[in-house]
Image 1 (tube, rainbow, N blue to C red):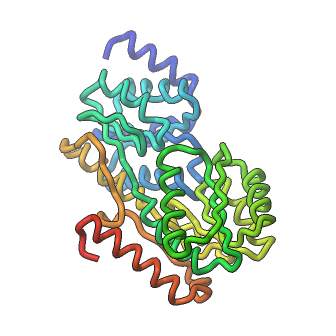
Image 2: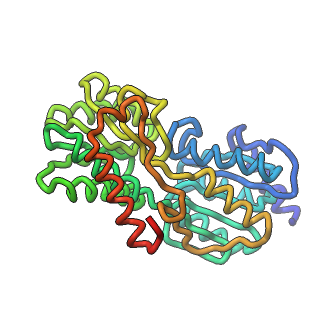
Length: 320
């Protein structure tokens, strides 16, 4: 590394938050870039748990960097390379374009983004097919609603997020074509007050079953459901502990295990770039029922979810 690059890295470090400091020494160095808090009980927390598993299972040196804007992302990517990262994970669609630009300049560093379209031999784009689990939950929702109106509230309209919402809608309408589905994007993953406001507005329209993909903001939706005696679904991870009196089930993506598997590839020098897709067939996506509320589901609801699961596996050529 040139003296100029070392000096640049030092200058960048002074501008980065303290959570960027390395936690231990190892030959393998993994960096996780997040656009939100690692304790959001959703998308970001799942990735952070993956980083913790990389540290524990691979005895890796790890860092977490919060980078929300394009400038912060580019700066964090450059700093990670300058600090000798072996693997840089950008957790979200917004990291893909900046990662593609820097991956082309540093072919010996491996990159992963969980979303996006640009790939390279040293850049893998992870597609968690969470829409497959959401489709199962849509089928359950169609059996659970008494009003025939469902709510879908998501953080931002990124393509992967829209696919998940579409999966829920597809599963619900396949069971009941007459359903009305009210869909909304918050423009935020952390504004719980806004999420609660939107959820209450949907309740005023008659919605009685909610699917949310809003991470930390989802707490507001659960509060609204609790206040109105309604039910909801969790997303990205099993969110039952977040609202066990409200959440019927969750669409779960095994992000920690997926990131660990990719880190193992990088550590063993067998990393593959390109599109890497994970869903029901790969055992990385599933639904998790809330045992406390499972009795509220009619047998037909569970049967409908199972029928969706079998159909998806049948399309993939996997045994049901």
